[in-house]
Amino acid sequence: MQQASASEPVVVLRDLRFTWPKRPAPVLAIEELRIGQGEQLFLMGPSGSGKTTLLGILAGIIRPQQGKVTVLGRDIAALGGAARDRFRADHIGFIFQMFNLIPYLSLVENVTLPCRFSRLRKAEALRRSSDPGDESLRLLG
Image (cartoon, rainbow, N blue to C red):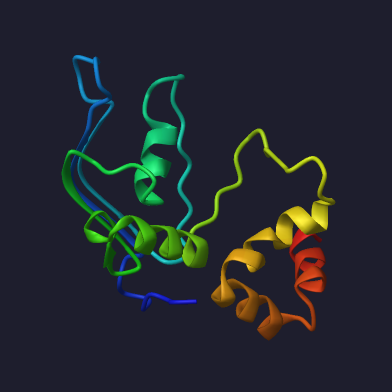
């Protein structure tokens, strides 16, 4: 997987604005946000405050009306739909409060599911363990 250098932020937002249709005010208005490699960020706020919208923008699922979104040095909004999907499969993962596991898959199958969509993710799992399932057990431990 692509890694950022220690001095280069992995996420940069500049002049970001997003307003849902039929809403009078922006749900997101971020002048600048920089997140470095290894940095942890806790998003907290009431329902409707933009937490999930921000995650959707960072993943390229939602495009902002204004501003620049850079993840791992790539301008996410400038990528076409298929390129955003590939970038997301290779580099983005979320674990939500309500895990939204696929009920007919085991826990290990849920954890290794991204390896089915991304050769990069599978190669990374195999670099660390002999099998993606073994790597998922290591991570879950």
